[in-house]
Length: 234
Image (tube, rainbow, N blue to C red; front, side, top):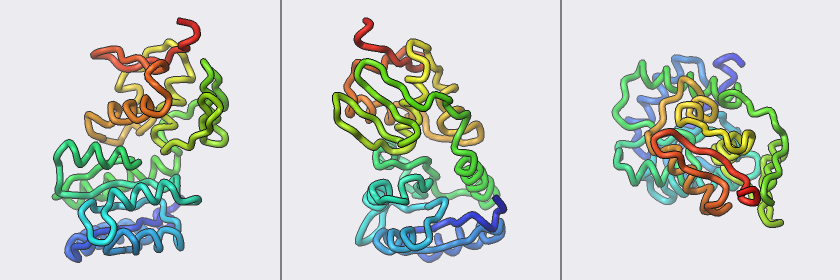
């Protein structure tokens, strides 16, 4: 894809922030859309299906967390890349963002050159579909069925749709049961080589997966990473 083919939606209630983002990203040739609150952003996203949404957390009417959650629930928008852009650098804000289904997190302020580089890397990852693809299209282990083609899982007969990064993480671990995946391997495969994410990103996604499928499938290897196990074989 050419840069001009990429659509980026900027969402912030501060005009100066919108102007800063728009000025720098227009330079890259991206198609830019803007919104000042979550409700307006959802309407624009439904009408234009952007590749990337850069989203503030603290906004009137509908905040960024609610907006991200709604994007993930809306048919046709589930695969949009969502990145939070906020001055709130506390851990709880980052955790809340990833819980809502965010792909990444950028803290204000950011230098224009770094911003442009970050967005290019994000869009490149979107175009390629992330890191190295997992080849297995279907995994069936211990009553947990993971269907990559339909992007859903079934556990104990109940189908669930996971946020994209949760699904990719689970699919990676389950593709090689008992293999210990290091944190670096997980970052590179699920988030991409050039993407910088918070230290707690993997931990948050693992916690969310365990909430949905229980604690029996994913083992923590302290100081190393994680491995997927078949609980029926243990």
